[in-house]
Every structure is written in C-alpha cells, then in structure tokens.
Amino acid sequence: MEGILALMIPLAPFIMVVAIVWIANQRKLEEKRLNATASQSAEEAARHATQVAELEQRVQVLERIVTDKGYDVAAQIEALRDTKSHEDGAGVPLDIKRQEKA
Image 1 (tube, rainbow, N blue to C red):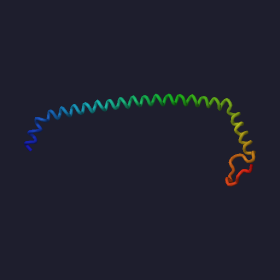
Image 2: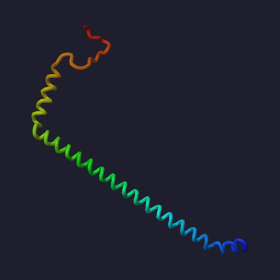
Image 3: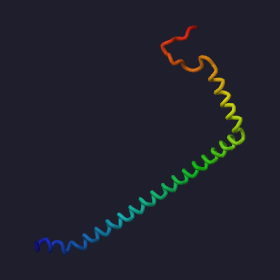
Image 4: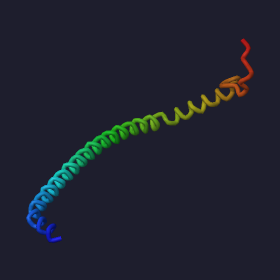
C-alpha cells in the first residue's frame, strides 16, 4: 500500500494536468456542437418561414378564387353531377365478367 502511495504522490500533478486539459477540450467540443446545432436550427427556421409564406400566398389565391366565383363553381359542379347521374352506362360496370359487345 505504501508503494502505491509513494508512486501516486509524484504522479498526482501530472494526472491533474492531463485531467484539466481533457476537460477543457471537452468543453470546447461541446461549444462547437452547440454552435453547429444553433446554426442548423436557424437555417431550418428560415426554410420553414419561407414555406409558410408561400403557403399563405397560395391560400390567398384560393380564397380569392372561391370568393370571386364560389357560387358559380358550386353550381357548375352540381350541374356536372346531375348530368353524370342521368347518363346510362357511365362508369365502370359492376359485373366485370360481362363483356361489351361491339
């Protein structure tokens, strides 16, 4: 036991210096990681902001279309539904085994 203690006492300052240098390097590395994460987050926030602005512009255009011709578009859609429902043989037949005659 005294042999180990006799060896540790002279080595203690060197071990402390190595520990201090290692801790300082770890702190610098962590700061670099935080800076990289912050810049990446800022870039993503800017990209999301531009996407939101583009979507807002598209919504404004759609609102203008709906408010300008909203009633006419709805009436035209209903008119198309009425004509499609009255056509005979429109769409895909339910009995697929039955073949069309030419």
